[in-house]
Length: 152
Image (cartoon, rainbow, N blue to C red):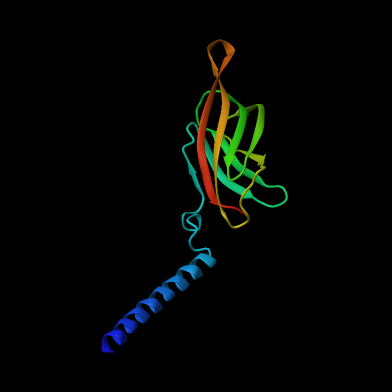
């Protein structure tokens, strides 16, 4: 009789401890504290030859990704296009817009957005551009990077 009571007390103690852990984890998840972007903030990675600043990912009726883009090389360049994939997809036709060290704000309309406001987003951005080479000709280059953060 004594062994049965000891075993039952042992199981009850561990049962309560497991229940408390489950409640704490559920509360952290419900408060959104398990989303890594809330701790790391906005991150911009891997854009060679370009400086990307102030990204903003908007959700809602007309989702958009906007950011400031500047070309950091001293050569002359023209924008061909920008393609976005990941938490949303979209593209922007650059129509040969000149690229230089002055930041220009680009806004890309998105479709297939699979997140809501306050969620983490992560998009891959490919920038296609032409660089002036000898003889007045242009050569096409591509650079790619990733932008992530909290959607608004």
